[in-house]
View 1 (cartoon, rainbow, N blue to C red):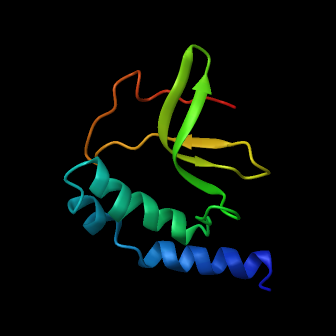
View 2: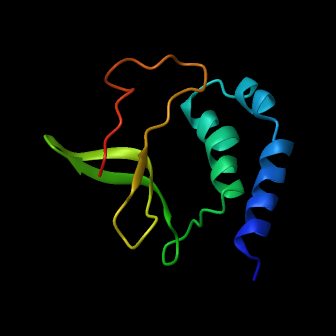
Length: 106
């Protein structure tokens, strides 16, 4: 198994090689942004998708404050089953409004 320094070096190399500009140019809507930009980024960062051992959960039902049964595009569980990070995707070139640009701490 690789040590942390090796993993960081590999991730940095993959990030340096990833053509973010080209990925953004290909994103004409939110679905394409997820496919060409967000999901490859998650793969580079080694987030696992899967029903049983995954730490990346697409279309996650998240309850925050007064928002009940709100779906977010992704949730990442860094430790255990509870999500640590939630991500709401928008088209890559879209300017976010105040409501969309909110960070929620869990």
